[in-house]
Length: 203
Ligand SMILES: [Cu+2]
Image (tube, rainbow, N blue to C red; front, side, top):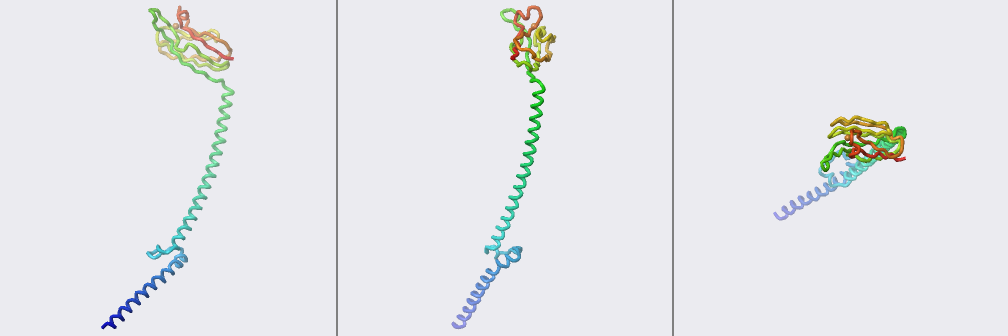
């Protein structure tokens, strides 16, 4: 009875050992098989062996190199685009510079023309009382009468414009001479009461 039982145990133990040896044997064989077939078959056992993992690393490395190549190409492409943009910008800049050289600078001013009562007396005036430009500038004045009845006169530049109430009147001229000039309203008594301003044209 005892012997028979011992023998059974021995057989079971031997089978267990055999089984253990068997699984350890297939375990060491698996990685080589995995390496050979390119890691196509993946079962539970392969997860424990290093070979498939290193294969994955190789694939990642290759992928990484490709990604780097792609980035490199993109950079080259971007570089070309930047260079093209740069050339385009330079062209545009040169064109605007040429335009600026050819065409005079335009100086624009907006002013109201109106009357206020001060100490019971009407004080007609322009909201802008001094304008400074450079000789050669194109001057663009936008004058709007907001109260009263007025006009705009600048004798030295031959300007005499009627300025109806609540209407923006655009007056343009080239400041082709240097000096200080007076623009004014020539309605009776208006200039004397303050309806004037100074245009300074710098040499
Ligand atoms: Cu006036």
